[in-house]
Length: 246
Image (tube, rainbow, N blue to C red; front, side, top):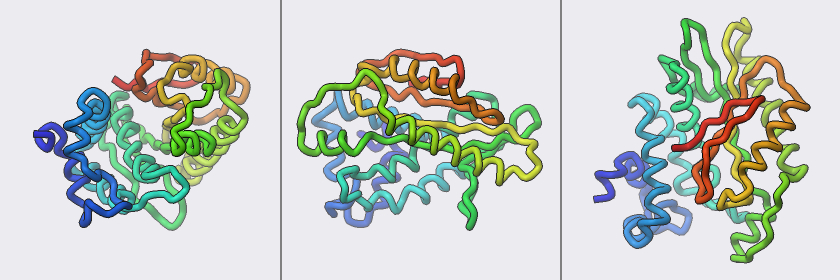
């Protein structure tokens, strides 16, 4: 039943030769989805919706890119973070579709770093680099130890250092790849906050917006993903676009 609801999720699962390996993702997947319909199933249905937005060529590319991560569990407590960093690119692909882009494709890896996506919008070229900001190591330890800590209402310096680094790196990649300077440059950022429920997320986005106002980056258009969380609402920013998860 779940295979018909989530065919692309199951295509990923079928790539794993030994699903019982402790390093393999999707362990006991059918049972987990069946036993946790109100918690786990909506998450995977949301991922399925993102993956189905890709055309066949884009899906084959992303599936190949994601394949090694299906059996690579991080030993520092971050699990299969690398896998989802790759799958996050599907959200950026779908955002370009909503902008009206055509001929969207993933850019194959090369010796020099390249952007993740390109497409055509209003007869002009679009380039997009995708960045994920993951949870702090402190939060990783807390989740491993099942401890409950207080949620900070303000983002810390670590977050903004990572944000600055990601934007700078992305801008350099886009500029280097676009030799003529004729393309529109997008940086699509997926922030994963320590606040897993999203209670403070609206405040976080306001703080990011203020940071962007104080530290503008000309020449690129920033898009921030507002991931679906238990406490969820559509958000807007003055200095960037927000892609609100449905």
